[in-house]
Image (cartoon, rainbow, N blue to C red):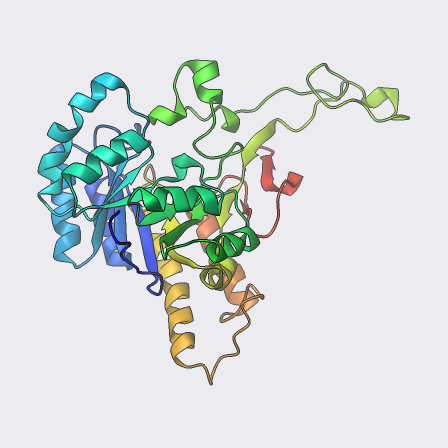
Length: 348
């Protein structure tokens, strides 16, 4: 087994890029690393990235600015595709890819054998939610795990305590959320024949549905409920999750053992990438500054607003809402399973 390259004490802001323009935006806004997919084997088939030349340009730009470049190879592979993978990756690896973000364990072992100097990061598509799973992939040579975004801060903290090595933990802090466990949903495949596990999710959970109280497909009507309400049209967006925003949980995540903070959005435009990146850069820098000046700041990792006021967070959340959102912000970091986590109504 390869030795784990420990970066547990370094904080990383990881930004998405679906195009070369987004790469520039992310780097200029202060990202420490960029993740991007090419034309093949990426779980964002509809992102605008990525002829081979543009990916190479992106890698060169990122490396020229002293940042890291992570290549997403995070779909489940079919047998015939295994013959194509090295032809696709060899030219990109030569330019300086720092890590592969991978879902398929068989492919991960292929990459490890051929590209020993490139790190393996376990994709969130693996739906890793336990220390047992992380210890397993550590033995396989992974150096970082992108945690399932359905975990709470408390769960992450407990996981960190049970890990046998100092594998890096990465967590999403901003962007889209999934009604199912991320990477484990077959709804798009079932309804439209386009699998999210192949990078082609059509987002059927984002569509409005007609549901009525008392119908065969809704919860039973409560005893004593007025008959006039039976059959009443309910909220149409019953599966559409609000977006994640974790500005107030950054210190809690750090204290739980997270070292890499990931922004979702490889299908977003450069202005979105730049705006979200610079906002999280500001908060992570504030936390780093506070750590270096302990006498000036009172540290309490159990409180979400450790280093910044609630007023500042509210103001910056409003700014982020204007950039893009699906009906508001939420996360699993402090709660699970609430109706206020769902969009419910059409955005105005």
